[in-house]
Amino acid sequence: MPALTFSGLSKSYGDTRVIEEFTAEIPDREFLVLLGPSGCGKSTMLRMIAGLVDITSGDLLFDGKRVNDLEPKERNVAFVFQSYALYPHKTVRANIAFPLLMSRFRWWQHIPVLGWFARRRAMRDPAISNRIAEIAETMELTPYLDRRPRTLSGGQRQRVALARALVREPAVYLLDEPLSNLDAKLRAQMRTEITALYRRVGVSFVYVTHDQVEAMTMGTRVILLQDGVVQQHGTPEEIYDRPANTFVARFIGSPAMNLFPVTVTGQRIVLADGQGLPAVPASVPDDTRVSLGVRAERIAVSRDGPGLAARVVVVERLGGESVVGLRLGAGIQDDANAPAELRDLFYAKVPGRVDLEVDDACRVQVNLTGCSWFDATTGRRLEPAARIEEVSAA
Image 1 (tube, one colour):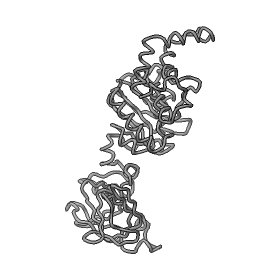
Image 2: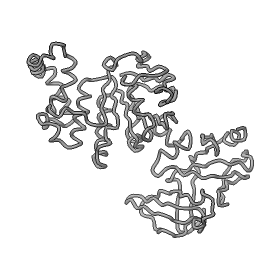
Image 3: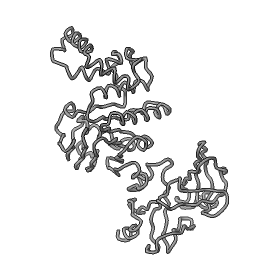
Image 4: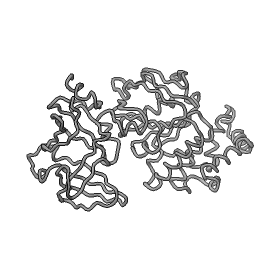
């Protein structure tokens, strides 16, 4: 059950850099999620941990021990693939037992008749049969042990794949987008089951996904990648509340964080349409351009009252909450010559049902508590006390 250390790790194929050099330390017994869009390098990183892909430079350590040169079987890891990768001619029982049988495999078992008798005898071994029964009960597969994979549903097949990984009691479980082939309802169910499984077994999990909902609900640590570059790593709460740059801010959250190009003038934040927000620290120099990041749940919208003038473009009523897409200003979204930032939508998430329709004029109040500030040029996060000084010095 090792702590994972990535020390200057990178991966290249010739001149093509797939994973840029990065360093991170992941404590023992964490649920680490490798998150990012398709093609960002997260599956390659997972396969580097498993030993299925060679490391170009840097070191990978399990509990301080360098494992770069160890074969996959020597790393004591279990891998659950995106496809279930079950043996169609074997029963569920035999699929689950396969890793245990392979651990006892000898060269002479390649001989057909001898191999058949050896496997049959091993399956009757109480150590193996009891372990299969225990895992099958944990994964709710006991009624299906004598069935073949083609007779199972997608969720049941995924549980068999997980059971096959669990039966070995490895040090690390590696899961490569295991829920991508399931429908929405089954994905939600399997998220709960995998999270409960992680709590029961109490070992390290490394989980690959492009779905930020899975990352936020399942992970205890997240590494977020884009184009092979680690953008940020930390707890889900840290990444959500304090995104390291505008890519992270826009990737995490549904809807994504609103980014307003603003100019800081005196004691006001001036938006692109000339409307202003108060409460800027007195030490902030005038006429400094930054990006203001505000989560949708920190924006309140009403038909009348104080706040910024805006117009409703879309309303999504989701039952317990509503998401309202808006544009700043009154009618400016209809002006083809208006700046692009004024034609872009921003979103408010409000509880319950909102009394607004498309094209309604409305007023918007922005809660700046916990807002984020980003360099308008580089997109990097700026801390409140130093955000303007960093921009000015750039």
